[in-house]
Length: 321
Ligand code: ADP
Ligand code: MG
Image 1 (cartoon, helix red, strand yellow):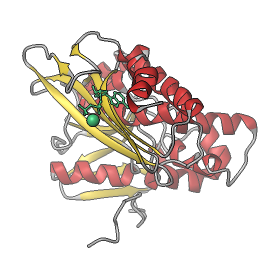
Image 2 (tube, protein in one colour; image 1 turned 45 degrees about the horizontal axis):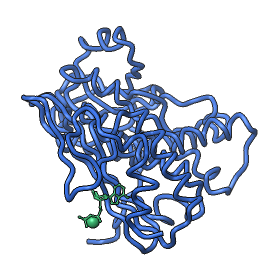
Image 3 (cartoon, rainbow, N blue to C red; image 1 turned 180 degrees about the horizontal axis):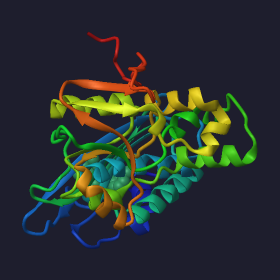
């Protein structure tokens, strides 16, 4: 199968690649054309996933397609953007029809769930890797950046923490657990649910936001730095699932929540006065701390003692000066 037949069969023909709202021209020309309503800005984010680094070489292609797009869509949620479209740059070692079919199905499922249309991409030969670029729209001035946290705000997260990292030993077949735990944790790892509705509800309410991809401490550090404030996190307020606690125990579950990655839950700061309205709008919100004057991130126990661990999440190139 040549490159063009492959693109047509697996991608251009997918339901998520058909024209629709905001997409004036999709796959097939030199560029896609997107139309923005007046007064809206384009939110753009790119993520690359490399086999052996970001996912196991031999993982299920359906789950990979699903997860790769969810991870990218989560960045739109974190900006308070409405999903519009995405592109896919795919590098494949060989053309394996079964693999492509399953990958395209997983991708399509997540694309439809997130209302994202596939509008283009690139297909090349080489070691397996995927690059997704997502496009969203947001009214000018309403995007949720990392830079607006105010002293006195609450620090909140939109869901349970630690399951993405906690699931890794199961993903890598290094450990086993009883079926209900395995099922719950693997579902969170392979099918993260980008918090798009929460992102929209946070427009005009949150002062800063991001999605947690590298662990709560590391990511809150980004808000602290961009906003020039100090974030104080209460250890006992971390929302941990029963499955994670049963699998890892309290200590390691906390560590997964604080320093593990892959949760794709939103973390945000917000004046306390916004909390009731946000909850009334149907969002699940966990208050985990507060914004103070100062710098950095600190974890406190029930007595207010600083118990901040040294490890700070996963960083590529951390040895490079
Ligand atoms: P060009 O040479 O102009 O860059 P390509 O031959 O790479 O175009 O691709 C032809 C068309 O197919 C383009 O519209 C491109 O966006 C699209 N495309 C290529 N690969 C993919 C893919 N993996 N998924 C979706 N669209 C793709
Ligand atoms: Mg090309």
